[in-house]
Amino acid sequence: MIDVNLIRRAIVSALSDGTSNFGTPPEPAKIYLPRAHIKSLNLEANLVIGSRGVGKSFWTSVLGSPELRKSLSSSVRHMDNTEVRTGFALNGDIKSYPDGEAFAHLIEQKQSPYNIWRAVVGRCIASFLKINIPAKTWLESVQWVRENPEDLAKIMEKADEELESTGKKLLILFDALDRSCNDWQTMDMVVRDLLKVILWLKSYSRIHGKVFLRKDQLERTITDFPDSSKLLATKTELTWQHHDLHGLLWQILCNAPDEKGEAIRNIYGTVMGAKPDKNGEIWQIHQEAKTEGELQRSLFQSIAGAWMGKDRRRGAPYIWSVRHLADGKGLTSPRSFLAAIKEAAEDSIEHYPSYDLPLHYESIKRGVARASQIRIEEIAEDYPWVTKLLRPLKGILLPCPFNAIEERWVRSFPSGIDKTARDRLPPQQAEEGWKSVLQEIETLGIVETMRDNRINMPDLYRIGFGLGRKGGVKPKRKE
Image (cartoon, rainbow, N blue to C red; front, side, top):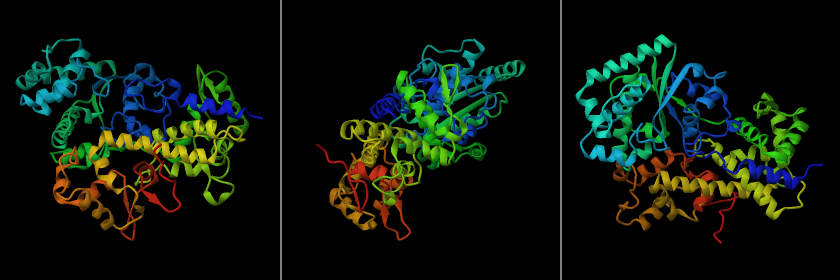
């Protein structure tokens, strides 16, 4: 007989920080490498695309840590002989790259993003070679790069030769580029010029660049320069399959601390026939727990039950919990999934203390609602214009025709899209009208157009924005 409340506390404890590491290296036990991500981590992948919460900053921090990088060496080629530098990331490091304010100041001083990025690379190479280039300020470094292209070429060649002689490679990482500026037009120029610099690096056999981008950042006209196809040919995408999310969950749960972890591993062992393998201080789940199949389904069923109600009509929690967190493109992020499971455990403790399984099905529904709220908060940070435009749609019953949405927008914005609603909205969409705005929202995976041309919104966003759907999870009422 399992101690249900101990398991609930274990789930809450293990998932307390979710997958948001904010650029800091994660605990080694929480590193989980889906097979689909291996290609993205290879040196040859210059462009890595992914939505928020799928692992862009996570992998940046892992690759940037010599200790954590070792854990990838058995799966990712060249990890054991690669030195890594960071060219831009969430965490500030003013000696290695300018922060957002410094970047804006340089652009105000008429310095091109292309030369700014070349200056970042120049400092990385100088650090590797243990030599000095002008670096009292970023303006000094940028001016040196612009005025001394031959000297820059010489240190690049010297670094490439030294790497060749030692059998090593050098990787420079670029992440969180939305932190470099605040408007789309400047952002497009910054990203486009960075990609030109990455293309320049391809002329050196041992020096590699890797850029983590959101999909919407790539889908605009940032690759309209000569030979951009050489970069696009290396593009990979960070996605999580259903079984990857469940594998990640059990990898984290089995490494919960103290008696909580022991309780989780006992459940795991009962289902799998053996506890996870211990490698040093880390418990590693078996391959069968990482792949789609009856064993993985049985694992989740052991904590959440067989059905999302009293019978099969509502579906199985194993499938339901992931499907209802998918965006308009059918993709679910680990951040949303883990947030929903943590909330489900907390809700079960509060509302169903005597229930015989750790996760009550009603709590799983509330977990999805909470994950939706978190995702809406993230959307407000990344795309402020989206939240301003979707608030007037509250209460609309989905799916609905486009004109029902357009009527709400015309009523709320009688003079067109105002200045506040334009915040970070790509200018071409603002100018082309409401249909174009909706298409941009659809590009982000927030809405989807059905075969009959009606507009729908996945639960991940619908619940948080307060829209209705017959038979769907109800939007959470504000207290």
